[in-house]
Image: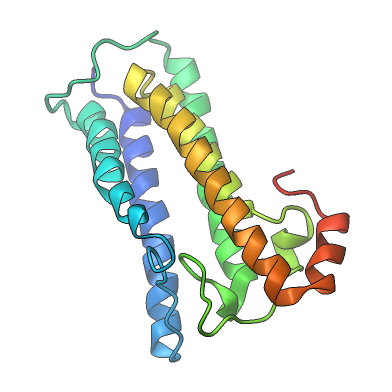
Length: 192
């Protein structure tokens, strides 16, 4: 795939996405909150990072002209690639809004040791899972920028993984927050 500004912006979005999460985790750590709980409930979650790194390589390879196994693109359209960039940046902004709305309650994974308060304001007044929605929007954007079978497969796989994690989180939230969470579920849609 040829070098283009949309490819570079797509790759930059992944850097921005990871940076938003890591900066928030670091800020919380400085306040004594351990926000990185990834893999503590299900050790198979540690199978996800190698696949994520392969995905990142695929997107960066498209931008930098590195070798890749993704094969030819399904289509070549600069206009569609720019629409993809719009999706990527919109998803990154939604992620940022989500992390800000979460405040001190932000966690990567489920925190059964020191859960914080139930967040129902900010972006969480519109979606119970805006971070996963943001990730999905970014993945669709990346596919429009780098339209290969690998980026398409990742949309499908990530959608399944996100939904699996949402169901886990909902089970925990239902047990921990009880009626308050049930009321919240009645007011706000899962993804919307």
